[in-house]
Length: 117
Image (cartoon, rainbow, N blue to C red; front, side, top):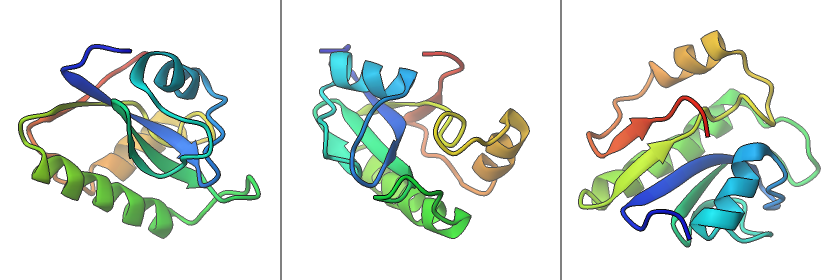
């Protein structure tokens, strides 16, 4: 499994098909499981951007899931989270759109953004 100190936060779909570069890394190194598309599993945390049919969910729904993650990170301050660029693989956000999305949140100090996985 990945470095036990870190929890990888990655983009998923609600069904838990982790078929992106980051999703595959989450499965192979951080304990993500197929069919677990939302939340904490192993040393990973899935945030869905697509529904169970593979269609984009609304930005408001992504915000809902992202806020759930922030709550989780705040409740687990002794853990360190590495945040991948949610929305840029499955959802199709541009880097500018991702950073605009991210700017709406106050990330806890135990969450760090990673550039590349």
